Length: 450
Image (spheres, rainbow, N blue to C red):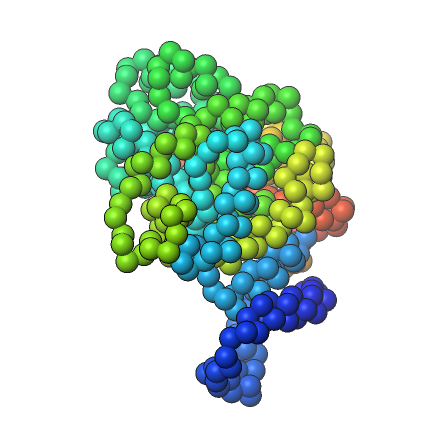
């Protein structure tokens, strides 16, 4: 089931890498006990059976996407060198590859001039964005929607910056009228616009937020950790497309290549539109920076040691799949969204299910119909478990009842959220497997509804 032909390609590349160090005198590396190592790896393989099949199209639950084979191979190849992209001394080639790959991501959003680098993931990238926001506007409030990722509040607490949430509209997007009201009170330093919320994939109204900045003068940070690559997609709804086209007017952007960028964990990216932001990172470290007058990535990063292998993997992937509209990489995103749209349509015309709104990206939330919230929540979990027994792996999520409009209007409400089923159709193969997924969901639902 797991792809293995690429191991031959890795061996060929390894010999090419090894030849580059042929001039070095031989030395005896630490002896490898082949028999013991083989036994340990076999044991590790056994332990790893205790996982859901994240790589398979029947896994349609959380935001887990297998890395592209070229990313796996490039990452593994770099581990024989194990470069550190903090200082050029520790990762000369991989640092150059990181700069090239990051520049290509920035260019995807229309930024030729920028400051940016890779990091461990979206949380660390958002930390840097809000750290910069706090340095530029000390003690000013950070605003994010109720559906923004919880890390924004957590990070603001770490940075000792005030953070407030803005209510969402009925489709999980920041309510622009509520934002306008809060901005009028003043003392706002940064507004976080989420381009693809974790729960529902909703996209905040960035074009309207950009207009409000003209009056109130705050910074705009775009958290596109999940949805950023959909900037290249060719089949977004018109309104969603408009908001993505305004990403270029933000002050900072976070995107996670380890989500839709086909990379292994962890690989996040932070970008700033103004390269002069680098002055905020200035520090003295004579024991680290001594071999080059070029910019060391550690001079524009809060992280210190970082795996150069992540940069090599991203660089290799973007050589094979350039970040271009209507290209092969963009077509992968189009297929993911098409799968979500078709899956949502099947749910919307089926009397057994409720779905609050069509997907903006490739995330669908739905729930079984029932007279009250408690029964719907119970059935959602039952279907989740029944599907898993059939090797169809969904996810459960707590979704605001308000997203479902008036459906439970006459029922007694004992809770503000309802337990729903959630599918992230982020593999292009999901489009081809939609009939199989629907059939297994139908069997699971029939079992639970009796």
